[in-house]
Image (cartoon, rainbow, N blue to C red; front, side, top):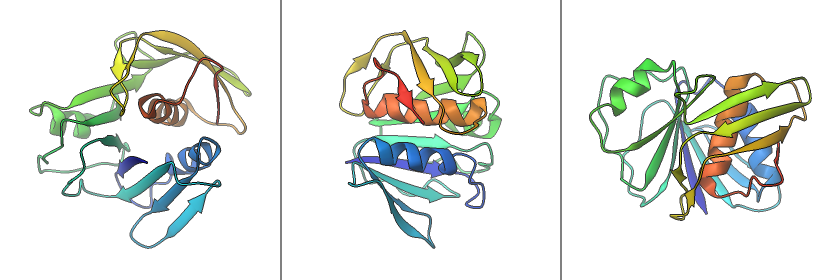
Amino acid sequence: MINIILCGKTNDTSISDALLPALGRYGGVQYFNGRILANFGGGTEFIVYDCEEIPEIELNCGILLFKNSFHSSETSSIPSGFSCVLETKNLNAAAMLKDTDTAAITCGTSPKDTISIAGLDEANAALSLQRSIITVTGEILEPHDFTVKLLSKLGPHRILAVCAALLISGVDSSQGYII
């Protein structure tokens, strides 16, 4: 089971609206945001907890995915087994992570980003993993390009966040993703 913590305003559903159906296709997901407990897909390969602040984490590994609506003045303790995903322009999350030993995976359109979009149209996207990352199981993913079939119109931010979560989770990208 892979734990994903979404951090940012709970009424900001920009990422969860794309992430939950995608995770449902790749093993199923149980989702909780403090009010709603729901299941997407057939199983529970993923657990997603949606919160405004970083909770006290007593887990060995997982993914901390920052929404652009994340604002926190506190530096939180993040276990070393967690990968943190943020959009490059998310200065609040970047500032919070600055003095930690946590691996930060940036998403955007720049060659400096860990994961970037190389091409995008209404039905498909081409993405590039530009630096090696470590999955939650400890596997090293080397830089490579992969495709994404889009089932609905999604902007770059949503596509990148979902694909970052899938890559870090160890979901094979060699045949591309469907989101």
